[in-house]
Image (cartoon, rainbow, N blue to C red):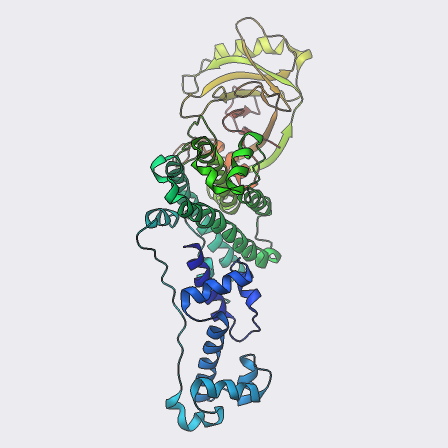
Length: 493
């Protein structure tokens, strides 16, 4: 399937460049294939060589131009990349059976060689799993790009594709996980087919798509439209697609698969490759985070950097982000008491809480706002409800008053795994406008401030440490007696 797609893309490339100089190496490079091997595949699929196809199409169009009197013979020869009128005339005669000079009187004898149309379909065998791969939202922008479109319209097409892909691809990755874990699909006789599915149908296809996307974005880079964060996201994805995970525990299994695909007969290796399902939103808790999970996250990362900046702007209805920055604090300790976010406000209880914290003046952290901290004790949102605590960030060694609870935060991971101490790194978003709109829940995953803050982070390609070190907080810039108008969101910088 991958090679059929490459041949189809090569035909499209040829059709766009029939009047330009074209080398076989250029065409192979354009479809991200090696030259000699691709020529053999092209001949196998189409029945003619790549050079013959180009020559037949050029001579066919040259005949049409001569019949329609669109130029002199010399001009048309040059147009279709012939160095001299003599070489053009010889090739023209071999193809059409008449000389170029005879076309005006004998035009009815001209041959017409139509563009090839590659029907990309596979019947039987492992067709089911290639159909699964086709469920990915592959980038088809090439078919829609025209010179009449403005740069803004071209970039919008890329954004629209990325939004669709974000909604479609996660479930396909989960289906790949199911397939890899299905022992009945990994018998000796299916191994070679499975290698084609995974290594060519998935990994090579994503590498090709990333390369195409880079080309589209480079062409628009001078317009000021392209979000710079997309380049790092593509680099991370490309590195993963070549087998570099950055995770020592996972790397061994990935190396085994890339080095010798027959290692995939080993159930343990396949489990490390497959991981567990993480659901359509990617937030389901998993016992094993595998290579497919990494691919799923990197794919999402590219899409987020494309559509999230625009989406976050669209979500600001009746309010706007006044300022946005990333901060890292030294070791700090949050001290407070648990409150249920939706319970009726108990002003006396809150005043008593902050009166106690006011007594700890010498332990101030420098971030001295009243805060409503929310976290899931390092677990996924699907397994642990959100817990909310009203209090303040204090210095790292601040004493904890009786009846209060605390959560420690440190700037660097300490190997403690899930839960506290959390990272003292966060995005700090300050909002202005309609306070009720800032706290609106309709149309948002949580509420407006949460969604916009998170989506700006995703659009900038910054990592959120979900679920191990994930936490958020509402900030009361004018004290807890007034509504919160700022938000903190945990990040990894």
